[in-house]
Length: 305
Length: 305
Image (tube, rainbow over all chains, first blue to last red; front, side, top):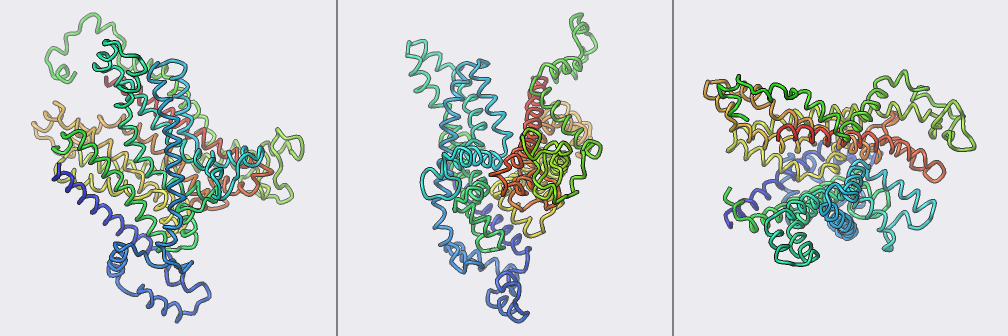
């Protein structure tokens, strides 16, 4: 187990190293960063001076080494455009994105677990077909279009909800639904499949045979087991949602990291983009690492393979 | 099943076996009985035909603008409609129906070209890893995990910034990113197929490795390949729409549905149909592809059972 854990942690670090290298080289393929900083009207000497000052004249490997060294000490340099430390810009906004991601995954679970359970209890019934219909439609609905339609209906026509900003809880309602519903089909299908499998197993038959009430069997015996993979998948979806938050935060003008990355890309603000890519990647790697380790702990056979 | 195909008794069929419908007609019957497959295929064919004969179908040139005919309402409104423009015109007076029809071309082009690129990359990686196993498998697994750790949407946006926004760049970027599912699925199927008796037999009689992979293994992965291709095609279409919506994708004046949503956004208060229609197109197309893929999976899985 310990050997397996150490190996997985080593691989996780290696993955982050490669991702950081790719991110760094990708962002340096784009327009000359010195030109971005100095501005369009800058003279050639100014641009040259900026290039020297920021070290863009050094070999790319050296620049990467410096950047990575500082990144490991939680220093991603200063934003080209806002001239403020990137770390401060991100830490000021990460709360909004995390709140949104958490609410969205909560929304998805609250919808998908009861619906999946009901569908599993009566396969091919009306409720099962209804759940399937929701899953099929949900998967085909473009997130950003759904968000726009909600803005038109609930924000403009009926004026129920605010359409821009993040000052009150009401500002989070539409973004949460827009971001959360997209995870619902996958989570619901997994709940349904897991429940059908568990409900057909021997120990459930035993529990029923010894006369336990159906409620106890369903919640205490069946759901508790069927829900483990659903929670694991929800953790992975949480990672995906950080990506989805870019469109949603931009549409609703929620100024979290997603909005920040859109803004930074518009301005070719490389240090900000690099930092966000690395943070999102680390988030995904850590979440999958934890899920793997948890699985190995629950099922020791995995670590031998 | 496999033993049967090698056994010398194969030629002796019983009366029931002779009278039983052929596998092909059984498959045909299953396809016709599968509602999601039939509905998906029907919508898909309609959209495909629309895209293919767009020049014949579209009443106007999708690029022809007429500033005197800006924002004409579609036919269901009472005022400011024009029989010549059934679905109205956009902010610079281009016929919306024609742009919607040509938009299907763009989405389908993105979908097909992306899965062509990503399918080749993913299948090559997955089949190699599954067939050779060991160190090769470990290496490919590492590549897959690295790719999964990269936040697709953010990196795609960064790549579009780096290489300039155009249809080709979007196709290339999505193609180079969306191969992970192909690789994962192909890897596991190849692993199973590698140990089938007839593959072992082919190896025993000295067939070359490329021959075994192409002639013996590949037919096994074909049906799963098609199913994964539908999933990734839907994914690519949605991603392109989101990228174009944010301005990091296809550029004006191309009639991409995502870009049309971007252009209609400022008119969402008074002309919400500018947003509703392209989104409906996206929704229908993705829904059809998903239904088609789901149905295909059910039909082929049933056959393998």
